[in-house]
Image (spheres, rainbow, N blue to C red):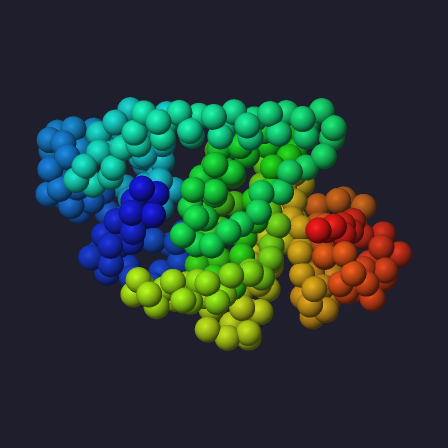
Amino acid sequence: MLTKWRCFFHQMATEQGQAGLAAMDTKLGVAVLQESVAKIGIASRAEIEDWFIAETLGVSGTVDLLDWSSLIDSRTKLSKHLVREPLLSQFTEEEELQMKRMLQRMDVLAKKATELGVQLMVDTEQTYFQPAISCLTLEMQRRFNVERPLIFSMHQCYLKDAYDNVTLDMELACCKGWCFGSKLVWGTYTAREQVRAAEISYKDPINPTYEATNAMYHRCLDHVLEELKHNAKAKVMVATHKEDSVRFTLRRMEELCLHPAGHQVYFGQLLGICDQINFLLGQAGYPLYKYVP
């Protein structure tokens, strides 16, 4: 459902001549948007016009991807019109119950983490699971990242849309008033992603080369570090085994006056990997974590 809704946004963006723009730069004209939605036949033209007004979307006269995603938020009145055929399928009662139970279990974990003073990092999976995981993670961040980032999302930078994912999540945290926390990784599922894309005939979501992934990692990291300079409550874990990325981070931290003692930037690697980097970082006073499988 989430994937179909997002694809619908990009389809209309293409129709409005905005194909290829970064997610935060893509903005749909409301008048054309109303016309497109009206053609689907899910509501009357008068109802549709009531959806896209200043009180619900702001005064810009356009709709960005954050606005668009909020329209199917279960807490909004609009969702009951949109989450139904022919556009989107509803959950069954059993699926709704499963979702409720899953959120309850996540709630137990988050409350326990609060008691213990630790942070939870939600792992990523393949792109055909990730929209649901990201949605649940954002819901937990909305509820628990009030004073500090207790819940960390994870962003895989081997994906072509990694920068869009990072910037959208940061903008959402800023707009909605919770603390941003992310773990930046390269990614793990290259072979599975490419095989599935070929089998089902959709565009390969993985960056085509090592160099492209490296550039994406540094682009996402640089954007996050810039945000940290202006937002003392935001945090990031630089989870990389690559020396050039660690050097890049240290250089940008110095340029942005992000001091290790501020504990806004963490470093993390797997146990037994890159110890030559870890020992030096630890001795220099940088917050450092070793993941123990």
